[in-house]
Each structure stands twice: as structure tokens, then as C-alpha cells.
Length: 105
Image (tube, rainbow, N blue to C red; front, top):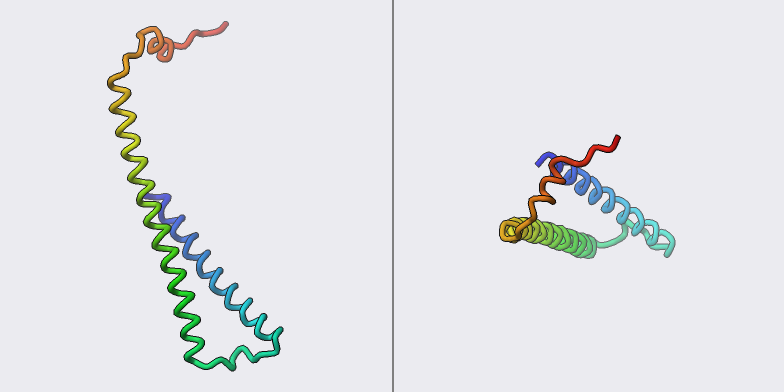
């Protein structure tokens, strides 16, 4: 749980920086074309902003969903490994060698 908070903070800060960078790049491209970046109509600006936000939130939700699936998969894999390892007979010599390794003088 402790690792989740810094990861979320980094993701949020990264998304904010990405948004600012993209916005500035678009303004620079409009200036290079000779178009006034503030000359867009409000309707066009809202369409572009809505599309950007939609893509951002869709990708964010897909990432969270895939992360959740991976978490479930690893938990089930761990349970599977515990179940299988309970049925496998390990010779006592191997177990004792792991508990008491040979001391080299």
C-alpha cells in the first residue's frame, strides 16, 4: 500500500506535464503556420479539449483495468504454486541441505 501512493503521484504529475507540453506544442505549430492560436472558435476548442480528455481518461482506465487483472493473475498464480508445491515430495536431503548449508573452512 505504501508503494501505491508515490506511483499514483508520479502518474498524476506525469499526466499534467504531458498535457501542458502538448498544449504548448500545439500553440507553437499554429504560430508556425501563421495562425493566431487564440483565434480558434470556442466550439472548436471545446471539441479538441473534449477529445483529448476522452483519450486521456480511456487510456487511464485501461491501464488501471490491466493493472487490476495482472494483480489478480499473480495472486492466483501464487495460490496455484502453493497448491502444487504441497503435492510435490521433496527429499529430506535437499531440505536439510538448505537448512544447514555446509560450512567451508
